[in-house]
Length: 253
Image (cartoon, rainbow, N blue to C red; front, top):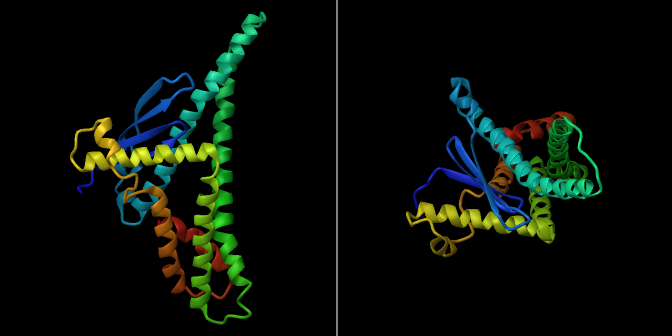
């Protein structure tokens, strides 16, 4: 199966698909219509050679993928917020109310700030839960286990168990389960394209909902590789060991 270079992700009630610098988001709105937005996203690696160097380009791609994912996820959620605001305005107009000029711009600025804060908080929580928690749990065993290698393996095993348990737990939520279904639909579509079949509903339905370049599987692979990395990194200072683990995550990814 030849790689198409196309990637994507699930959003709220829809999917985002990207091919090189072009991407499109399709979202099913509350009234059943499908809204499609097309746009471009140029990488900083196209502007300077430095960002195309090995390892550097990987970190850049990782961060840019995260930012685009957030942007499209925010867009999909905004469609539902707009629908709620529209219903609220209709109720106010029916009651004789009137919206003030400039209120929309102020709301958009607040939403942008909220999104930035949400991303920062999400990153902090992810690092604390998937990186620091397994690290400190394994450190509790250090008085009983002298081997650095064994402790590194235990730490990695705890990290993988936490990640798998987290994914399994959130999949029980109805909204997240719905997002996972769109995630599978995205995989089916890319599999159809990479097999050289005509892109239609009948051909897409026949495809597997699993894909070898799945982002979730990628995170799991990163965790396995990090176990190997940390086995060979010996640092006596506990705070320095913790800092190295955090700083090496984007490099390993």
